[in-house]
Structure formats: C-alpha cells, structure tokens
Image (cartoon, rainbow, N blue to C red; front, side):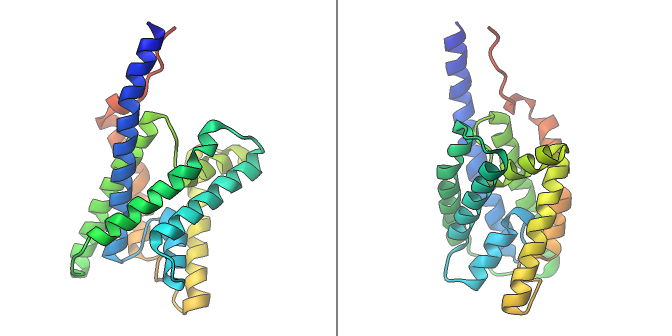
Length: 218
C-alpha cells in the first residue's frame, strides 16, 4: 500500500515539476524580451550574455552550476537533490534559449512593456510554485539562497533577499564597468520582479494547495 501511494505521488509530482520548469523558463524569457530589466536571479547571466558571445541560456546554465558549487562549498555535503541540480541547469538553459528564439515581437511602448513584465512575472511565479510544490529538485539559485539563509540563521525569505541584492548589484557593476551602463540588465523590471515574486508565489500557494506533495502515511 505504501509503495503504491509513493508511485501515485511520483506520477503526479514529475509532470507537475516539468510543467513548472517549462512555465518558469517561459515567464523569464518574456521578461527578458520586454527589455526593461530582468528578474534578480537572471541578472548576472543576462549581463554576461550582453558582454560575451554566449547566449542567455548558456550563461544561465553556467551561473546555475556556479550556484550549485557554491552550495556544495558552503554545506560540504553531497546529496542526490544537489547533484541533480547539475542536469537541471542545462535543461533550464536550453528551454530559456528556445523560448527566447520563439518569442518574436516588436518592443512596445513603456506602459505595455510594464504590463508584459508583470504578465511574465505571474507566469514564472506560477512555475516556481509548481516546482516547490512537487518537492523534487529546486533551482540552484533558490538552493543557494536557502543555504545562505541557513548559514546565517535566517529564514529562506531573508536568504533570498540577500541573494537577490548580491546578484543585482553584481550585474549592475558588470555592465557599468564593462559596458558603461549599469542599467542594461537592472532596471524597473528588476524592481517589479523582486517586489512581486514573493507575494505572487504566496497567492498561488493559497490558490493551488493541491500542488503540494504530501508524503504517504506509513
């Protein structure tokens, strides 16, 4: 009975996770395409892509791997979920590049760009909600934010805030010193995403409680 319950749970969790990963990548691609600032977690990869021949997806994969290695350095512990973040980094990068290639639209006026940024924010927040609910593998960026919080004795929300500040400042400094403009990746869209992600995920948590994985009782 317990084995059957676990199989049923896994049959639900894997499709939920895949849907969340695809949705998150699509929403982030929309925000990048709108071009008024990207989400904090994408700021460093996007900045590097502007300064090198690498695509956004390639830079995102490399940044995710860096975050995975940083977790390993901070915790000094191997775990299956940590190691599985490695292929996840490549899959997410490939999805991001695919959506950026597929999304083709003329850059609209600023009010519409803000609306599209908010729409992208809702989409990728929904994806994050699905991924978290499946309780499988979290993104390396979120894993590092959680690890930072744990190391400092903070809740994940504060660890996430610290992580977002670090990567946003890093992205702004990169483009300022190497391209002469601190606002290529960090702009009003970054503020919208930073302020809105938490509350929107909280909203989706209330709206979709069925997403949460429930461990089968023994």
